[in-house]
Image (cartoon, rainbow, N blue to C red; front, side):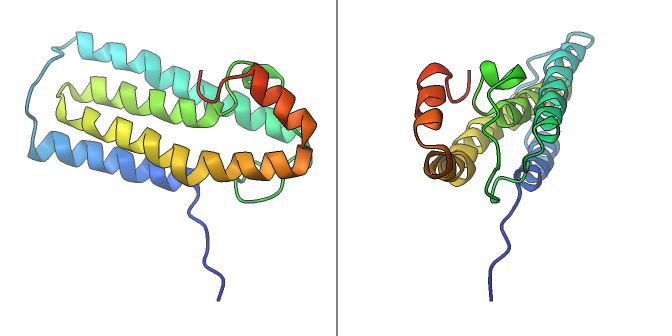
Length: 149
């Protein structure tokens, strides 16, 4: 029986739940006081916007947004000119925003673990598929645009 792949939004949801639990159970240091914690809305909104722009670019190119399917088009325009992985970058910004909104330092422990997990579980596998599918075009793009920012 074929195992179903876990999609990146699921990892984001788990990270958000873990952040909330850490904040509730072990709120070690409250380092941002109200109303300054509301500045978390900025990275949160930027992360959501990055994801929406990237998703829109995939749909305009008529290629899959699902990381475990073979894409039909190498998308290199829009937010993909800034980052090869704007959706994962957006997820990290969302987590940073939520961390600021929560006001305690403990939830931030989740963010580097999430980034490393996305790099090892999703990004590296996706880039192998892109290399195999688009060859020299992928190599050229990867040489010009950084993985994260």
